[in-house]
Image (cartoon, rainbow over all chains, first blue to last red; front, side, top):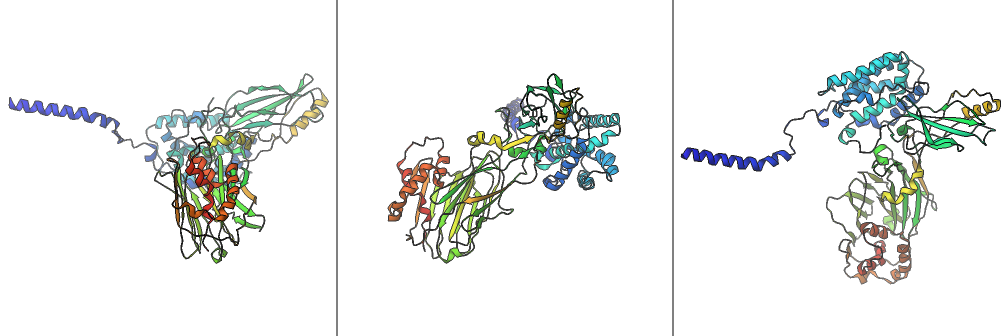
Length: 200
Length: 416
């Protein structure tokens, strides 16, 4: 009987403890489930601020894109669009952009480096540096979705034929902007303010 | 952002020509009519609302109709608001007080389609900085040197107060430097303490939430003074302000305070400072009209230099050439005393030990000027006063405060 009473007392005490501790556990700032895939933890998917503070290269990239886009008469097809990021979480967007960067370098810029465009060699070398910095960047958990979206981009390039290369150069400004918004350390720490854009 | 499409009318056909404007987002299928710009005679069309997302890219096209004949569409190049936006320099206004110069810099402001849009100019263009230089017309010397250190991030409005400090003697014949570094945070501490070797001003972040204006004058062998002011800065975003070394070989020294003003106060002015336009249309393919005259004229339209467009690049420069300089008051009998003035706008309590010590004859003569400055709200103190108790009506008279206001320029009193 004494043992039973002692057990009952312990049990009541335990419930009281649980009752009082539960709210604290629920609102605890320490995550119960370790989320190693948060933006801040994916440290290999970060590009240094210096890349985006480089006014000269930024201007070269924008000028190059302007040159190429002025001869791109196809205003309907767009390579880097919202479709590319469809259902891809923010923490995986840098990895996705890394894939787009690699693809653009290998398929367009390196073969075209002797082309008529101004500064294309400078831009290529600059983007290669970024590529190297993102070498260790890996996806977290959404590989099928990322691969699916990336595959759609590649399919689109096949549909467009040779003209897609010029289009890709014309979208270098978009590529750079998205690398900045997805991979730059500063941007990762601060979410884009609400109400900044209004997609149609 | 404010995106306005401009075009030139066909030469010789400026009257009775009507225009239609269409726009589209890059990567979408269809162009859409801008209804407000359908059959218009003006040669511009505001597409700010339609090109609102500054991270998207757009096309616009325009068609001329005349006498039931119309041209084909003349199309712009791809327009990227974030990159193609032209940023104008800030508008500069200056006011001179008895011993201070106040400079208002109204920087560019993001165009907002609705009041819910909280994105500021700085959120979009975090790299844009203004460099500041000031030239004294009288001496042709640069009061504030143009350097990497004279840089500040454009706020919606920045107020710079230059305080002329009448200091005499050998101490001031030496090169003086002043640095001011205003970092993010809402409470700043500003101190000016010139010594024989240097005049340094620093704005430091202050963790405490003390909200008072204090003044300290100290007597030492060297002509030294110290001024401290806690200025409440309603910064909208964490920003950094850097002010320049101020040096002068004459016996004039300037204190410098930079602060951000409320965005709302300049909202109306600033809309015009940020203008973006559609890029020039080149190699346009135009019209097949039976009307030869129209064909020729629209060919002019086709070759027209459409717009003035500049990409955002680097930092706009600002050179202030009209800085007035207050002469040092030579021969002035500088009365020396050690007094601490402590004014707390929260309690509106002013503690001035032995206030009468400050009231020399000369100061009484100056009283009218000082008062005028306050009436015109040009003086430094009135600015600070306004900021710190802005929730109260200016008519709210306070004996202590008025007393202090009348004596606010005590800080120029220096010992020989």
